[in-house]
Image (tube, rainbow, N blue to C red; front, side):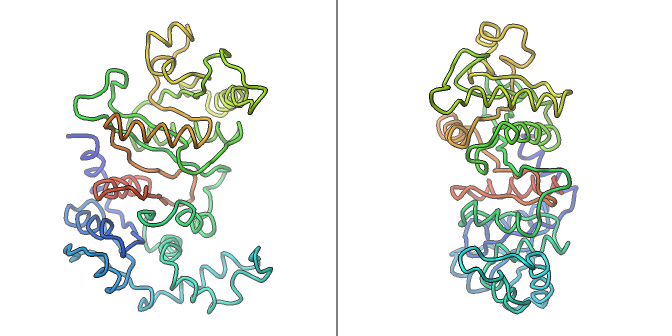
Length: 343
């Protein structure tokens, strides 16, 4: 059984309910049908009959719970939840309260299906949330930050991609599974945020991907070989992040700063970082900023043939995940399986 099939089988045993917010997207509609037919999870699909028809999909939705917010008897309950969660918050553009009353909150959620899905999750009527096939990451995560919020003790919401090697495997990643973080949320993380991302991504590697994490903190420098103090001083940031992450999770196999080849190729790791337990053997890769991370995972996906599952969001109080707008049906199915396993 391949890795994705294993994920889906584990999710099926979990029996969770996941809300998909984009009934207007053909890929999402077809994924909803497939997920229910294969027993991977129960699905709540948000959208009107007209939305689903316009998507162009003829998928069989028997077994899928379709929720049209305009007709949903729970809309008042969700509006009340939103109003309470945001009471006292001021709209920065207008200077007025975000929602004057519950009626205003209801009017807003009837137009915003992503927020509606987050409120279904907040209310406990679903175990997880997946969106982003046709909405930006900001539009997908904003409801999470506003109503789901972060888990206790967590400061940094972040993301990782689970990358699955193509058929035939990879000579450097023996498990055939690697994790990249953060490629989707934190644009220019501080050293402390980068350390949080490292610890969270290692946790995802262990709990969701089922691998023992060996974490490399990436840079264009290996153990002080590079210096960019005249510019952004990113090397020092990665060095500080490495130290902080080691303090936060001393049990982790984590080291840096490394160039990518030093982190993954044994012959380079031994040469550039002799004595490191991670150099040359990493399977979890933490990037210094979103530029490097996003470019890196897309090169891996498009030129290397790796499957990218995610972004898997880390740090929310309840499972909430964002899709890449370039996703296909299988990507959505896999992300739903991951979300079910986070619940």
